[in-house]
Image (tube, rainbow, N blue to C red; front, side, top):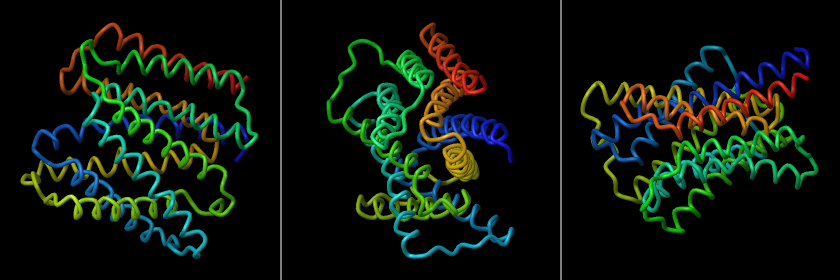
Length: 295
């Protein structure tokens, strides 16, 4: 594969990752409305993904073998990815979900700063795209006036962003797992996540099957496992390896854009001027970065 082909595939995977992760509300909102606890939903989305990806890899005769050093790093990656979800959902208890989304989208900044610490300096076009997408996400997600905000929620949302940023950088920079396929990387990340959420469930005392009573809820859990979990993690890993963690992070602008479009089209949520402006800025910033890369 030529460098140009890798770049095109990397950007395409980045868009796919953002869009697929942005489908969370499509499957998650009906489950929450049915009374399925967040912890149960997180556990099943990871557990079902493990089974589906594992069966697919076995059908393709892919090896599951890793050595001890690789496994330790894969466990760390799984914990980071799971921690990002836990911190985000916990932040919802203290601040509005829209504001939490805004703070979580600081992760491109964290990625860029970590890369600078590793003496890898993003181009000015990438920095400009990061700033523009953050402005766009703020417009998309900023809560209405009079909303009570607790600093604990902001810290939790920022920790979610930081966990995700470290995950992206390790996937891109670690030589220890460089030869491991995206499938295997994602599989073990999902296994660790499923175990972490099951442990969290047992400690919390939440009933695992609470609210899961109909076929519709089972189908929504499967959809949640396939699109915003398995496909998102696979395409994130692929994009990060091909175009780097900073550019992949910027492509994540498609996540809030997709989530808000789903809310508008499927759940009849209002489409305000702020939302339209935010979507336009995010898409323009991503297109600018892609066009700059082509140049």
